[in-house]
Length: 66
View 1 (cartoon, rainbow, N blue to C red):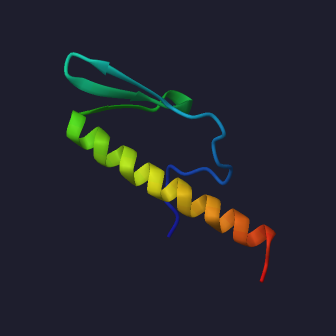
View 2: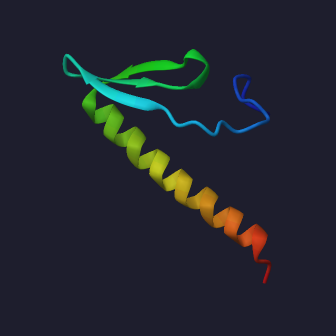
View 3: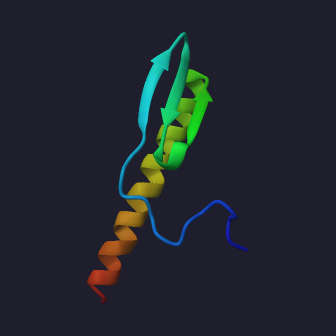
C-alpha cells in the first residue's frame, strides 16, 4: 500500500538542517518541517545515508544489467 504523503515523482532538492536551541530542525520541500533531538537526527542521518546508498546501487544495477 503506497504511503499517502508520497508523490510519484521523487524530490530533487534536498532538505536543510539547522541547530536551534539544542534541537535539530529539518526543513524540506513543500513546507515539510521536523524538529528532532540530536540523537534522533543522527539516527535519521544514518538511515538516509544507507537508503541513498542502496538506491544509488539499484540505479547502477538498472543501468548495467548482468
